[in-house]
Amino acid sequence: MSSPTPDAAVTAPPAPSYASRGSSHYDLILTLMCVVIIISNIGASKGVVLGPVFGDFSIITDGGFFLFPLAYILGDVISEVYGFKAARRAIYMGFAMAAFAVLAFAVIIALPGFDDGYGLEKQAALEAALGPVWQIVVASLLGFLAGQLLNSLVLTRMKARFRERALAGRLMASTGAGEFADTLIFCAIAAPVIGIADAGQFVNYVIFGFVYKTAVEFLFVPVTSAVIKAIKKREPTYGQASA
Image (cartoon, rainbow, N blue to C red; front, side):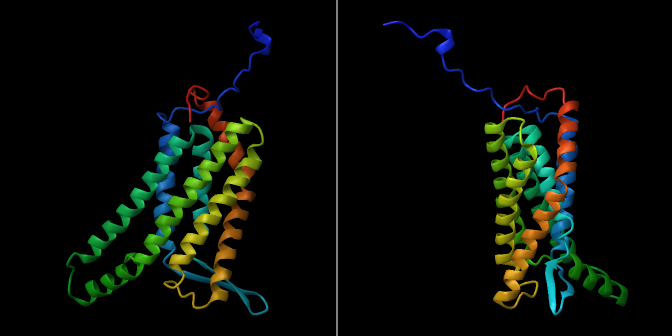
């Protein structure tokens, strides 16, 4: 029986290219991502009503709605350039920093302050602005964790198949999956706290949150793609690391 010729041998496809996370670019993106997450979580404690926009129809959302899509854009950059392991590390760090911020605010609020009128006024304002509403904290952290991990997993799995091709399509697909999971989990837990009183308002909240965040990220896909390509060119280790 003759052995197969070299031409007949099956060659495994090359592994997708990634960069090492030991670079200043990764650290900067990670830092920005953590800051955006913390500020978004603070803003999410405020319910926002936009409108009415069509007749009596108003859009119901929260105060962090215009910031949170940026966290997913940064997550996309990390996943595409540095791989799933680096993205998972960034997601866990963002989760930990958000939780730490909540605990720090709780300690600051609990510390004894001045008992004069000025002190009491500032204490009340601090509690209103930064006091932890635990349902919102849990909703935000769990939604972020599930959504970002799913977003990164979908993006890197698709990269394993398409390599460097179809970047815009991969970004859109991963965004849709991650944002849906994030929005549904957050809304299901946080809705009662921010004043969502019935099923209609809940559906409005979920649909607007998902459509808005996804639309913003879709709108910024050209920018995200350009940033990703620029970082790839400037990362000396790109193509030398595994996912």
